[in-house]
Image (cartoon, rainbow, N blue to C red; front, side, top):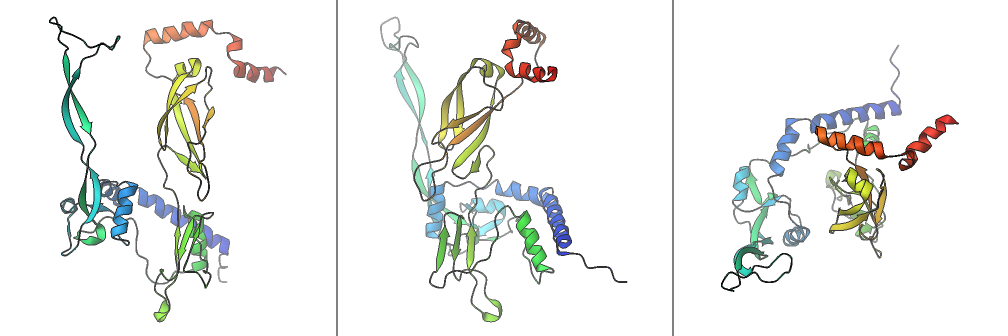
Length: 332
């Protein structure tokens, strides 16, 4: 008797397990480490310079690097390729003399003869200059490491495979026809861009498919995004939690100062109004939410431990409201 065919759910489960295992093996492989080692040596360009590169070469394949930098990767710029102009910072360091001031009175400090004492100081003057870079598609030579693998041939159990791919993909995958009267569509709500006729070539000489671009935000080591709002965690000391004080908080626009109230508990979340992401196709900005966590000090010496014990002996039950209410529940 022939074995019963697996159900669609069983096939999807099997494919999902296979995809997850392959992904796990990839990120633990030497291939992934080689990719990180190589790509981390490329410069991370600003948004303005990235726009400049794509204005001059719309179909540029990143990364980009200078003429000589490419030689470090075993590649060379193709003959006849023209460099792409970007603006590079070239700060100028200059030594200047300025009056030495008294730290308390801010008055000039004088020597025994009554002359003002001058201090030599090095300042950095921000300057910029145009430089030429070349993108990867303008070079030849040793292949750059890649995590992608070109797929050829047919896909067995295609529908089950696509369902498994949708479940495991970090970005949404969709196929949808465009309106016949449009050449493209930009959806701010779904954050997708679709362009007619820019997909893969059609089968047997048929028309090319449509290109669908899904816009996602790369994970950040500090910030998390939910719509227009930004979230982050901030460690604070035991002393800061008890006494309060000024806390420096990083935002996407730079650091800001926040006054931490006395008696702040770990896990407390504060709101920084207007410090989130600008609202797409609208007005205003989201907020930033900061959750603080008390970092317990480690490696205390004998005197520090003794000081803490003496401090603990001075505390009473009313100093720990949550602890008191927690144990009171067991008495009922």
